[in-house]
Image (cartoon, rainbow, N blue to C red; front, side, top):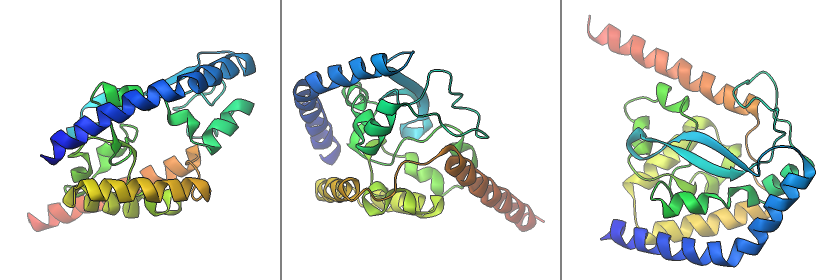
Length: 213
């Protein structure tokens, strides 16, 4: 019943918000095109429910010549990009992902596919539900948390699914955004998180090997 109700609310509110924010989204797209060369939208493959990959949509906040796969060089944000990142307006196109059934309003954030390569057996459980525009980790400190703390909160969310939990997450996220708590991760931040996960994954593999001796 929870999944049915959640999907119903996701669809209804996604449609309403798309209609309400349509003029703003057009203005943002227009501003991006004027501000710098390149497309208005940024599309990147992310890990979805059960690890299924999908194309996640955002407004482009970086220069078109920015190499998102090069972790040695930080993102080159445009003037408009800095504003829409700070206000989280770059996330609005993910309403389309919700309509397509690839995302929900609330759920663990869809990370780049590199992350799932290093999840432990317990951590992979964060992929048991649809990813969300916001999640318990974003409502609890955003990127002021370590990657392991984020995953623990995501798993807690998976274990305590309810509409009331979703409402609390949304309220907490609004507070975090308004207080500008924990801005979006830089490339170096993502690199550090991946290295931390890779290290713990290697350690788990080593421990498993010792248990089999």
